[in-house]
Image (tube, rainbow, N blue to C red; front, side):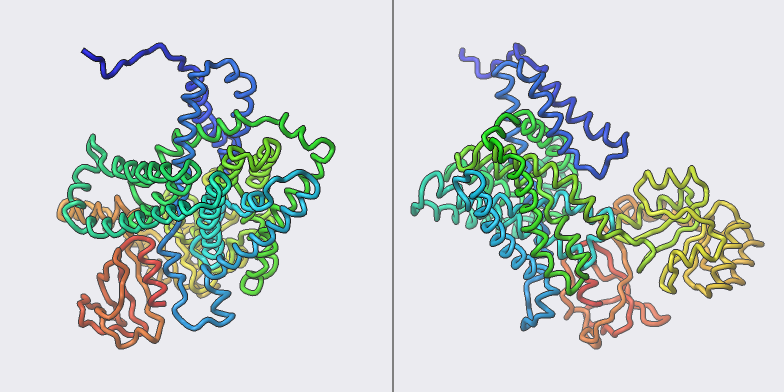
Length: 630
């Protein structure tokens, strides 16, 4: 009898143990040292170099091959998740629908992103040609393609931590980075294919990948509305994990098809599989996305970056001889110049200083630049020295660019729409975190020094000040539209704060906590919005008993679905029927408020300017609805 499966435990596991230990230790240590703003992959590359020099050099050839295979899986996963990061809805929403003027062009993130990419490409070619006069560059074109890359994985977290992802400036940068990702990968693929195989008719077979992409997209739209959705839901959390298996199947289908065309096309195949899934997945709030991130960034991707560091060879820089320092300095200047100069297009909208700061952040490069240099090294179009130089530049730009951006464009928590929470209690901190998750700015006012430090460590905006003093709200630049939540933990201080806000600032949007009848009377005299804790608790228990499914849908899954009031501002909506409004497929109109009257809407309900619509749906769907109505 033939043995189909022969499992042998005669395998050296310690190199894998070392790599897995580093993958766990790096983010853990960085969290303890409060280094969350530094991309962990940078530290992984550096430590990978150290273990490659001192530990892995003694590992067996078989063990190294296993690690290289896992690193390759991590590389494919990285490209897959890069495609998944692209917000397809945002790109589609930015297609121009009216006659273009200069003003409309500058306000359109997609068009500006395309021009930004074109200018970056031109400057990169010019910069690569200048550098070729200093060192030997065998392919100026490929060298320039390496320089046009950017890193959404660095840009997005920086903007999100500042609450700028939903603003016009943040959307302009995110879409410009997404356009750079898409076109960089396309140009890499075709260039690598031509370098390896020459310009042959078979290159047009790559277009077949896009046809398969469309076929999967077409079938996906059909199947998600049929029995397939029900089966997927039933098996999604069982031992079968059908969603994860299906996702991996789609990724491998594209990778294998791409591999049939050539190994240099695998990058595009992995990216397209991620882009395909981004059409059907609410990426920010999906449980499937959490699982995929767990698989990728939990194991495979760290192995890739650790092995990049392990393979890094400083000795290869010796090829530059005496021109090494000059080349590295000029390369760094060029990498920043090709992103900062095009960013001046944003100056008219956001000011010169903020536009240039955005250009510095766009110069962050990480996964794509390492992928591009890896392919270039394999194709012999860049030397080991150039490869090592670009890895060094990736480390430097990812460390320096966010610092320059935050320094030139300091976040001002005191300006604009915000919620002020007076008192850093556990309730206040939880409220601030939930508001932050929904993209709303919240500032906590806390006088206690220890509690202030604790709130800062949680990454929340906090002001060390006395909430009973007028200068605190002058410093916060309190405006009538700001909500103020007063919950200091002391009823006397709460009353004092509310009196100050009502009598000295004539502020109206104040919320506090109801405790007893005597204090309620004082609050009502001040016309303060009261939160009756006893009633809220009773209502919560009532909902858990009478309507548990609805309660859990709204509370337990608040990251998946939101309820929001949206004011109709656009005059074009006035007098139109509900059925005439193209609401996003992932949102539902629940209620219409007109003055003091409430209406349950149906298709024939007429909407008026000034109506407030209560809408239930995903974050992206609500953002789309806000744009339509206001």
